[in-house]
Image 1 (tube, one colour):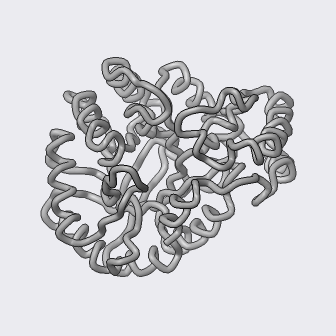
Image 2 (tube, rainbow, N blue to C red):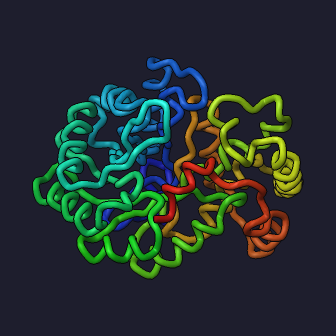
Length: 329
């Protein structure tokens, strides 16, 4: 692991990124109201701390997030790895659609560049795989964006192993992004076996279990907004999952660190090819997350964590039923 501006860095294909990045989804009202001025200050603070891995998507606020990010990085473009995604489409009153058609790839990229106010995106992901379009066609269109200088590197989010292999054969894939935490890791570890074999970087989103692994969520009464739709937080699963987190909190206390530090350190300990992008609206929480970087885990620590929350132990799927249909394709 190398260090830049005081923050440890890791490789995603040809990119060097801060090992702990910043997921920007919460800045567009997903987990409660966010103030744009405060959000821009958060992004600038992250950059000043040496966090350069900034992860957005055209779906976050349906353009709002990219516009916000574009304003925040003015004068700082050379200090960030600019990441965004395309592929999810808005369907009023129903689950999001998916569009991987080559024509849409080009259209979506042009719109993102305009909102971000830049000429080039450093890492461009297909946010969800379109089951109705061969991945070769989608990635072929993404590769043309690289040839045109509009995109530097390509990524996939929530793609299955066969899709990753087929995509990588068309054009090198720098990174694959999947939810990964102590609570939800079975699918991600299957994906990582593929990415590691191909030399592709792995980006873990929701590494804090959508807040569960911070220890701050202790009662069902705290669940509202987006979390309320996720099975892991619903009444039939909550107590079981809260029990797993209680075991984890005890280990964090023994280690002398915050639960969030231990959760992030566990993900980073899975390999030098792994980076994390926890999301937050708070400067204090961002600073807390960076406190995970000095936490070193011994083989005994890792074994005890695996025993406390074994793979597959969490109750409830990662997304509601409709959302589960669009992952690991």
